[in-house]
Amino acid sequence: MARNSGLPIQEDATDVDPGQIAPDPRSFRPKGAETETRIGPLVLNDQGLPDQASIDRLYAERDFQRACQAHLWGLPLVAYGQWQNQHETVFGAKDGDIVKYVSVRDKLGLITANATTPYVMGFVNTARTGPLVVEIPSGEIAGGFSSFWERGISDCGLTGPDKGKGGRFLVLGPGQETPAGVKFDYEVRSPTFNVFHAFRVLTTDAVDGERILNGYQVYPAKDAANPRKTRVVTPDGRAWSGTQPRGMAYWERLNEYLQIEPVREEDRLFMAMLKPLGIEKGKPFKPNAAQTTALTDGAEIGQLMAIANSFDKRFDRARYGGHWDRTVNVSASQEAEFYSQLDERSSWFYEAVGLSAGMTTKTPGQGQAYLSAYRDAKGRWFDGGKTYRLHVSPNVPAKQWWSVALYDLETRCFIESLARNPVLPGGEVSDCGRRPLLRG
Image (tube, rainbow, N blue to C red):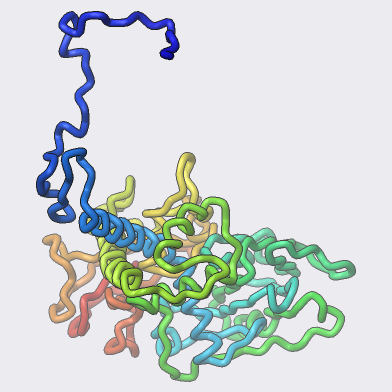
């Protein structure tokens, strides 16, 4: 028995204005025939439903599209995961050890490194060590702590809470409590178990620089009463690569760290997208043939999307002037008012590694500024087989130092043929070997 809804009933359909009738969306699709779409022809029956072959194609396309987007999403995690892997497997660095990068050869595997300042960097897994103490020396340094999604947790040094005066930083992983009896000045809570910690020595005084290096100490809080001397490791000319791996190796590294780290609320939808691709928290990664195809193709196109997103930026205010881009278009939190900065962070973390408040500040006289160029004066991509001249105006507005460097577009690292002299204070560079990008 029909229930009266209280709405007027139209008795005579001929009285209805045809312009007020919403068209049936299915009427625009050919039924019982093949219809062309952007993913190829699909066959629909008389009810507008796809046949089994078309359904299989739609699922395959869904998985491919999800792999492309997941590739962009995972760039920061995979970058730190790859770098930590190289610290441990190539340099033999363990939790609490730090790696000192001084020479250009040391930095050949580091994405868009700066050749003029020494780096001191380390990784630690707080699930293995428990709460960690990091003693920051006083002096002219810029550094900080970052989660493995490359979100800055706290700066240290000139842009940190210590304001260059140094102090003890207590680093806590997810769910870890402040240990009793441990002295510290600043508490740093990381949303990931793995934590990146680093600093750059900015002083030009070699003796003071050595004091700073020796004063940087990292040890588990449980050993605070009798901490070990922090071990300093150097690359020693060993070949290594911090560039995100390609193809299936990309997904293997992503899965490795997704298994370790907690799932953040904002990433649950991406985890849902990865599930049909064989990447699922708490389960082994054993993709079948169809999943492997989607992941392989997604990694290929995802990387090309990352290249376009980095080297032809389409963000508001990305253009600085002339042929220069503002390289950093993402906030330190990776969040805008109404959305997470997925494209902005993908752009930066494909082109570079590491982010801190000091790198994103717009306050004159503080932090750092990064500009990049990818094309010549006529808008053509730089060509490694050609010679270019860079004109630098006098009185560059830099308080401490400035530099210019060339990187290979494929690895985003120094070009090895120029490894002995990658810093360009203004002048000619030729025979670059590969397609370069210019960072100032």
